[in-house]
Image 1 (cartoon, rainbow over the protein chains, first blue to last red):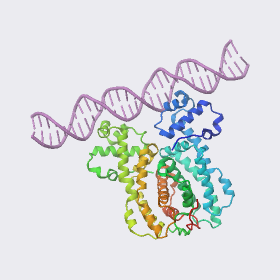
Image 2 (image 1 turned 30 degrees about the vertical axis):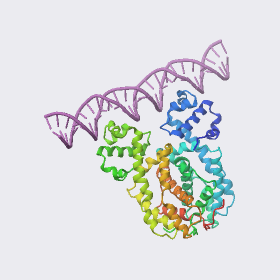
Image 3 (image 1 turned 90 degrees about the vertical axis):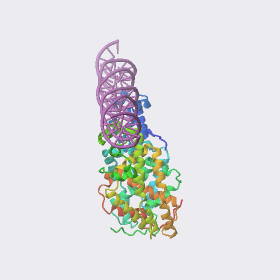
Image 4 (image 1 turned 30 degrees about the horizontal axis):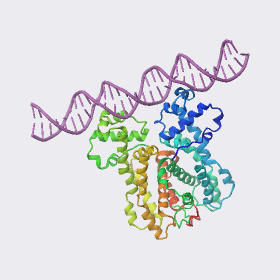
Amino acid sequence: MQIEINFEKVLGEKQKDLTEKQKAIIKAACLLFAQKGYTATSTREIAQLAQVAEGTIFKNYATKDELFLAITDLVIENIIEPFFMTGLEEIFAQTYNSLEEALQAIITNRIQLMQSEELPVAAIKLVVQELPYRPQLQSKVAAMLEKLPLQEILKNLQEQGKLIDWPLDVMQKLIMSSIVGFLITKIVMLPQFFAHELPDYTQYWIHFIAGGLSKQGDGEKCEN
Amino acid sequence: MQIEINFEKVLGEKQKDLTEKQKAIIKAACLLFAQKGYTATSTREIAQLAQVAEGTIFKNYATKDELFLAITDLVIENIIEPFFMTGLEEIFAQTYNSLEEALQAIITNRIQLMQSEELPVAAIKLVVQELPYRPQLQSKVAAMLEKLPLQEILKNLQEQGKLIDWPLDVMQKLIMSSIVGFLITKIVMLPQFFAHELPDYTQYWIHFIAGGLSKQGDGEKCEN
DNA sequence: CCGTTAAGTGAGTGATTACTCACTTAACAG
DNA sequence: CTGTTAAGTGAGTAATCACTCACTTAACGG
C-alpha cells in the first residue's frame, strides 16, 4: 500500500491563500501522520520533511493538535465527502431497474477513482487511524455518512417494488457500514488480506451487497 | 463504548505461571493501550495503574514494544481466534438448509458473546488500533482469518445447490471482510453510528449478508 | 529612504520519554 | 546461620518532546 498524495485536492479552495511553505507543512504532516500515526510523528520530523523551521509550524497552528484537526477538516471536506457524494445526483436522476444496477453505477465509479491517482489514500488513512481516539472526529464522519442521500435512491427502488420492505434507515446503515467497513479493512487494516484481488472481485462484491449469496434470496421479509 | 476486561480469558493458560504483579502489568497495559493507543501510553502510566515500580515492567519485557507484542499474541490466541472458531465444528457437523440458517447459528452465537461480559472489547480494540502501523500484526490476523474452516461449510451448501456458484475463496473473503469490517467499524471506528441499534438489527444484518436486499436476488451468476 | 507588517528562523526550555542499575526483600536449600 | 536465586524497587540518565521568543528577512506604501 504505497503512500501517494494528490495535494491540490486535499487543500481544496485554500490552495490560493497559503504560501508554499504552509502547503509544504500540510503535505509533510499528511504523509507522516498517515505513515506513523499522530502521536508517533514529531513536529521536528514534519519541519524537516517540509524543509521548514520548526517555529514556522507554530506560526499558523498554536498546537500540534490544531494542525492535525485542520488537516482532518480538509480531508473530510475535500476528499472523503466528495468520494461518497460525487455523481450521486446524476445517479439519483436516473431510474434504475434494481439496486444492483444502482450500486454498479455508484461503486464502479468509485473503484476507478481509487485506482487512479486521484484519491489520496494517505489522506483517508490519516483520518481513519485516529478515529478510535477522537469521539469528535467519529461524530463528524458519522454525521457525514448519515446525510448521504442514499435513502432517496432506496425509496425510489422500494416504491417500484424492486427492493425488500425494510426501513430505509436500516438499509442505508447496512449498505454504508458494509461499504465503509470494506474500505477501512482493505485500505487501512488488512491490505494484504485483499492482496491477490482479481480485477472482477469488485463485481462479486457488488452482487454480494445487492443480491446476496443465497440462491433462494427471494426477498422474504425478515422475521423478528 | 465502555472498557471492560475479562482477564482470565486474556491470560489464558499463562495465568498460573505469572505473579500477581505480572498479571497487573498486563491488565494495566491492556486498558491503557486500548484507551489511548500504543505510543500515547507511557511505561510510567502502566506502572502507576498496575501499582508497580517502573523497573518491574522491564524485568520481564526488554522493551515497551516487547510488552505490546506479548499482549497482542495473548489477545489473538485467547480472544480473537476463539471468537471466530468456537462452536464452528458443531455447526459444521450439522447440515444447514441455507447459508442464512448457518450464519444465523454462527452470528447469533457471537452476538451473545459480545453482549455478555465474556468478550473483552478492550483487547480487540488494542489490536485493531495498531494494525495500520504493524505489517507483521496484519499478517498474523490475516493468516488467522484465512485458516478459518468457513470454506468447508460453504462447499457443503454449494454441493446441495443452496449456494451461488462462485469460487469458495472469493465467498469466504466476502463474508469474512463483511463481518470483520462490520465489527471493526462498530467496535473501534464509529461506535455511535450504530448507537441506536435495535435488538433485531442483527437479524436484518444476517439476512443482508445471507440473502441480500434485492427482491429478485435469484442467484444469477456474476458476469465479468 | 523610512516604517510597518507579515513570514520565517533556530537556539533554547522545561517536561516527559523509555530504559538502567545498584539495591532491597524474601524464600528456600544445605 | 549462610549462600543463592528470583522478584521487585525507584532514583537516575540521555534523548526526545511540544512549544517559545528574540530575531532576521523581504515586501510594500507613502
